[in-house]
Length: 300
Ligand code: GLU
Image (cartoon, rainbow, N blue to C red; front, side, top):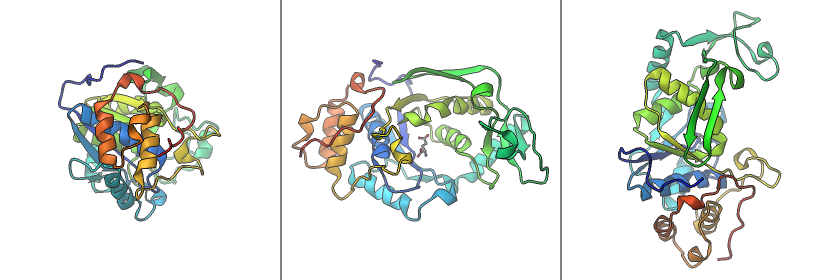
């Protein structure tokens, strides 16, 4: 897809990178960071960093700090104070209260076993009414779609494809889908640039934005770095770590993966210089829609 380098939304550009602190920065997350950073810079906009620390059991102690330090070493410090989702639960509670008041959210005690294969929820069938409740939202049987800036049109029928989905987890904290929608709106994000693994979360987010009366940003889903076995890197045991103490090899590989020519970056020794050049030579038409293998690190 060939899209304009001028953002669609006329408001002052605000982009973000929103890693979960489940481990150190890896190649897949570096792609999302670089893609969103260059897009924000070339639009003359602001780039925010939000730590999505809403899932304590999956968090690795110290990972958030190491990710933040790694981003700085890769030449991408945040433009505004970093936000932590764990400190914003009041906002998510208010959104939940509104969904409840509007009759969209409901308590659900269904277990995975109750829902059966596929786990799609259409109505409560809980076998044990004394289980603690999660909160789900009732989804419409209608198509919800959008025009992704890179991937083109993407649509789902939530009732068939996803079912009523969880917005507040049984463990007592907000689900990603609710928190991300509240935060993108509250932080005034105009365009979301992230990995294509989240393409199929986007219709759920559009649904929640409409239900909560929030604006919908533009979306650009970058190609995923797939391992040789086809597994998404961050999910794979072969997730390639990046070395913040020697950032250039991974940064060159990330830029090559995202479509920049490799030769001009070979001689550059600092991430700041490489990112500045990447901005000067940013051509959205070169961004690949899919990419099977991470590009090999060009010789230094
Ligand atoms: N925290 C999510 C992740 O690390 C990304 C959320 C987003 O960009 O919307 O996969």
